Length: 265
Ligand SMILES: [Zn+2]
Ligand SMILES: [Zn+2]
Image (cartoon, rainbow, N blue to C red):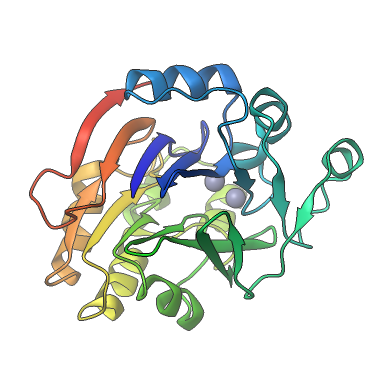
């Protein structure tokens, strides 16, 4: 299994997972031209017809904004749960609905989802091949038991560490937005990500990639330091805002898990 981070953070999220000849994208918050260029830079050619599905987690623009164009450009089916109304997309595409909490297959890959609190109906996703599983969990208001359970069955996970509470409190956001981010239906803070990581110690999870970092309210160093302290025995790496990189999941415990890291803004 290989995973390609094509963006993480408020400027656009997309993760391509490839295993057993099947390719799926979890979220498409960037357009097809960017997606193809970033993948090409990482050494993967994405031709029309070679993407087997786009699984959307929720309807926010940084995750959903490129869904239509990517589906059209690569001829990929769109998988939505009932909490994503997306009238326009449903009118124009033959959408495949999936039920939150019930696993389904795209080719030989098994997709599992768990509801997570956020200010739009939102899920965390587990993609599993015969041998490996990766979790994607961003845009999380607060840690939950269902989320910990989903991630405990993964080898590696992309986990949100959105903000440092102090930087958010004294940072540039207006008060209302500060409350939205930290109020239990927004985004996971570094200490909340650390708490979740602590619950996962001793599980199958061997590596955490921290992502969806805020540019204004966090630093890669703070995120890494806070989470790594709680994640005893789990390797923790940080993907700065706008990271584009290929993650090698075949040997998740090796020191440098990146095949290649590029920076786009
Ligand atoms: Zn987001
Ligand atoms: Zn969101």
